[in-house]
Length: 217
Ligand code: ADP
Ligand code: NI
Image 1 (cartoon, protein in one colour):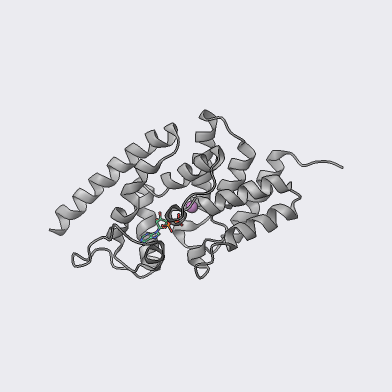
Image 2 (cartoon, protein in one colour):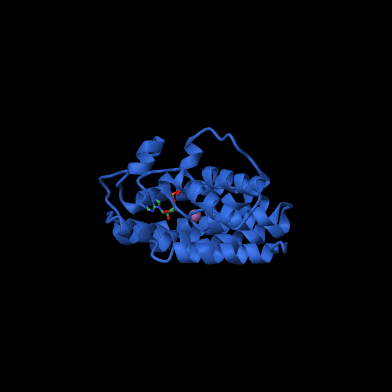
């Protein structure tokens, strides 16, 4: 029996993800996955880790996001698991990739973390980098538009003490999301490389907000 190389496995996975996400919302589409995959490979060059796990988890992390599936948080890990099984990936790898998908989202940080791995730390940083900076701003307003949210409403202040359920069901203006999530990410980065990259993107969001208010007021 010929065993497929890691490069073949990754190519098959990328094809599956590109196809599955062909109609996805612009902030959670193939190009978001592609950027996270690129960021993850960059961080993985510097930190020691299992690169196959990293690439598979980066590619599959948003394969079925709960916010587009009635809040179902198991549909992502289940879809990823079925696909990996269909291409004959070993059980241990599948379980690790599923654990990463389950634990990497910002929502998941409301739960007490019960799983840690170097690979989770790296893919989570790669995903967080795509939520901040110029790209992060574009993604937030794309998602806000998709959900028909207001851009800004001075009468609705950000809620910094949301429960997980409130976070999942909020309909607040998109500017609030900067305070509720985006500006908090730089202090949540796991890796040294991630921290450095986040700092610059964070400063850019701060200048963006300063300009935003100078135009509004
Ligand atoms: P996760 O899926 O990692 O738990 P989110 O759903 O908060 O976390 O984030 C994914 C991305 O979707 C965010 O970085 C942001 O771009 C966008 N997004 C999610 N919720 C909102 C929101 N309320 N307002 C604007 N953008 C949002
Ligand atoms: Ni993502």
